[in-house]
Length: 161
Image (cartoon, rainbow, N blue to C red; front, side):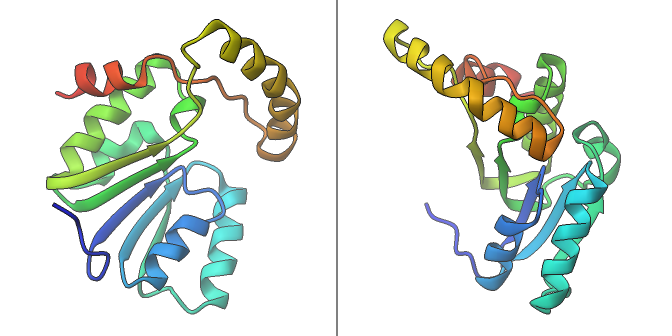
């Protein structure tokens, strides 16, 4: 089963500068996008205003831990989390997963794009060498540290409440 983008309701959390929210809105989706960073949301808001997409995108300053009090059950066809789970602690990941499943409509899709730990030793060593300079750049730009998400598939299954 595929979900048509037209008239779908999207949730992007950790939306950052709004690039993904804008892309979805330009395809006809209604988007609720939130981030805890006021700076990122200011950039997103400016981009959304310039493209006249205010009717399709709602921005909110929220953290993942506020999803339970700000989002309704079964409200979204698609939830997209891009580079969010790597910034969360284990308990926050569990909470975020449970909230995603709560607000996702039956038959909806949860799309996660994030950094994961490679399975083989060789790949983990290469990953580590590449990750060091990228982590420094990420901290300079986003003022936050990330950690590769371990056992993402297992977490998706076990955290579903």
